[in-house]
Length: 543
Image (cartoon, rainbow, N blue to C red):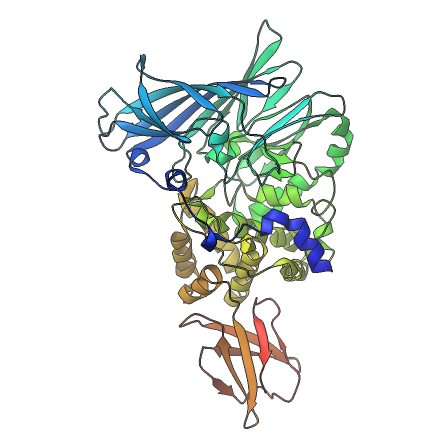
């Protein structure tokens, strides 16, 4: 019953559909691949300037895209999803022609695109954006109201695409080096976006524009608008790189509650700077913003809607009690600042890089504040929601993610690797080095695997093939053979190897297990023994 309850709670988080049975269209390819019309230009800067009308539920304005020419092509792909519409493309004062194919616009540039040139394209657009039916898992805008009837609005669009509400190069492989976000809203509403507030401009029509500047590369789904009649408070956190502003924006009715509940934020920062290294966006500060849905990892502007409860809406995925010692959304979504916003997948098929490391960070948060055994228990307990339904890695070039098991199964893969390495300080330094080596960059599974193989010194190729590319969990099969313990791995890929520690009568034995039967006389199969529970494996006694 408990497992069924948690699976229902996870919902779409752990159920992404049967990819192998799905048919793909040209739109999937245009959305999910680095097309020739994307490949020839490199994003440098976005200047997004929009007006949000809560009554009409419209967004309108322009995005000026600055880019460097990598090869001399003349057709550029810009993405904006229906029912939003682009009104005009302008370069150097000239209105350009284009061909529209579904959610993709192919723009014919008149100016010769010379290698190395920095050019700009102004894109005017508007319309009624898609409304999210199940935020944050279905993309779109959430139009809600607070208890006083004032607008309470936010976006969430990972997977479905930032182009649901603004025109952009909607693929994760390319990020602008920086960005300006200007949002005009009716008074007394505020708009909170990524980065730092540069200025507020008052207009005669009782509206005002909030201009935010992001001083770091930013992934497109992390671009955020959060609009409400907010109250603000904050603090200064003395971090590894010096003073860091922690700012909190909440509905006025929740101000006093938030002042107590958001104490999890500096606790999060202490734990994650210890494990992962400095917060990656000191220049942009850190914000926690209340929104009318569960939450999302928008870069430097993490959104929050966990109803001021510990756990995940008051539930503990692990069933151990440790999940009730922290607010799941604050810890998980802020963990994405290191794994998603700092280290970003190039293709959503590699979404495990975001979710496995970040879900694992929950266990490290518990470890830091309550001890290693507590962190172990949290991650082991969360195995009850793992489905082992299909591979964690999705289908490349089609904007298709893998199994929802990328969350807690992915976390347990990393937990298993930590205990294989069996050197906690080495493991911590690997995580910190990873955030330095992949700092502010997009990456792939193969690059992450290569890094972990290099830094661990372990033969992890088959390990990753097993856990990421199949749905099967290694099974340690053992039996008694001539009075001795015989053992081997089953349900594994060719060449799979991983040692296992077992305890028998207070003695720890290490078995170097392969796919073929091996025998040891160090362990008496007639005397009870226990396998290391930190290794995510199955056990089968065939005696």
